[in-house]
Image 1 (cartoon, rainbow, N blue to C red):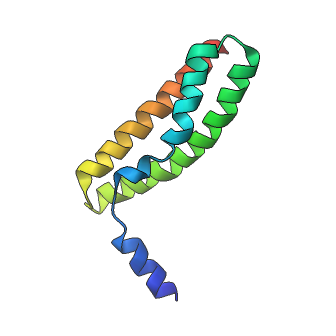
Image 2 (cartoon, rainbow, N blue to C red):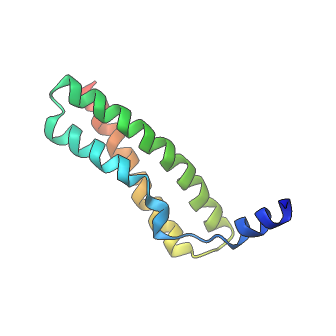
Length: 98
């Protein structure tokens, strides 16, 4: 059973669906952008963004692994670009209001 799990992991390649953390990061960014002056919006955006950043960390690690193994490198680069940009932007938004 362990061998089939290892084979499934080897067959997995980078795809644009690896950007799923943006589903959490984008609402957090929008909330901070348009209602960030309210404390409830800041903290709600921070909590939603924290879950998005956690997911982004896992997907960034997977994208780096795909780059190292040369599996769809352009897609892996796209995933890295999207997730890193959204993560950095969220952290900067949170830091400017702190």
